[in-house]
Length: 380
Image (cartoon, rainbow, N blue to C red):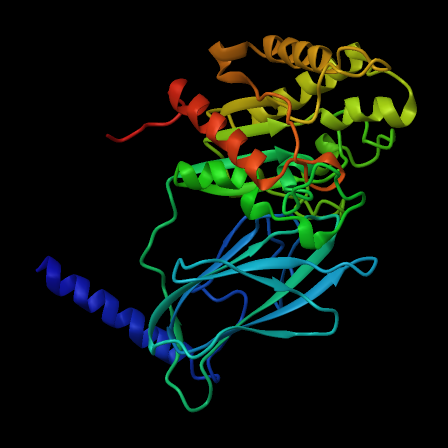
């Protein structure tokens, strides 16, 4: 009986897919066959908007080809980039272009079932993206989307941070780093958070923005700091309110504070320890309020060190202040942990940011930390 029920269920799925595919294999972004991981704005019925790095679109289809309808809203001449992953094969990079609407993601495939993932590699700094849906096959082929039979991983992780968490400049590797930001060299798929989530078979959400701090940003201003944009679906839009019930992480990793100390260089003013500890503590209290059962990891590194003569003991001060905030909220007895990775050494990515190799090293350390502290169940 169980076997018969299962066959009937999948037959219904195929029938539903065939019925929905009558419109030349065109699927709206609200189609139940399309899954989203990450913060997306579905308020407009015609498209889905998002900007944070790592946002992922998943689908399963039968057919030889698939096309995505995407509008790039990148700013200042920049372009958003994605990875397209077909059937879990090697990712292929797609660079969006102003004015282009349709992107052929795959063609000349075998006329069987396939999976597809679109992963946003670039961050909110580059700009928003509007996704209008998929087109599978063509008028002469029998192609359609189906429900995916692969459930999402049960473990949920979220990484909150700045340029390090975004993957700023990580595709470069040089002892004399290129100065300035280029979207083509930012790859969130190979940032330490995404690597960690894949190693632990977890869902991955990244809520990060380059240059932002806890109290002040890298340039010294206090506009749209991490605590301010964290409640937003789109970081640059104060009106886009995120519902924290839509994604409740089991493990929350905060890599925040680097830019507060980086601002010592741009402003010539040392971090105010009382303010930093107070605001970091307040943010931890907010996180505990949103996610009462989450394991919270407060990460420090790898771009801060104690080597500067002008701004003494930055790493020591940074770690002490974070440890004070952790203590203020109850520490490990309240499931809040301190994780420090050693300062990076060359080669470097853009603007002395970590390379993919350094991100991999940090991810390895973080995975070990999570397992050793028994923050996840490891099956033998």
